[in-house]
Length: 153
Image (tube, rainbow, N blue to C red):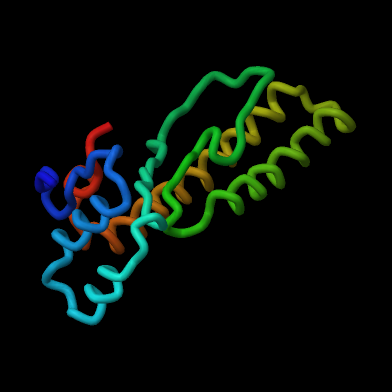
């Protein structure tokens, strides 16, 4: 197997590698780790190893409010490093329902209700994305810039 290309602290791993090849790539990357951990990894069943691509949205998008809105990962997808995805979608719902209720029962326009929801959702949703990326960098990147950790899309 050819050695994966380096991008600083990570390797850009081809997505089509099988489990055994992925294990080889991992071991090549962490060969300086404690032998007890390496032994455990070497005994991993290759059929249980797979490629997992980690993606995240870019905070900061602002759009014109319309009759349709988004919540959860459809608007602020994030890494799994803080396990915030599902919680953020539920939080978004908690922001949206009172706004829609105000539009339905208290004379607030639907556009104003959706706009107010989107403004609040952007504040907390984008912070969750930044927090998730930060956790990934601490765990994977040892504080290096994201461009040094993540492979180009």
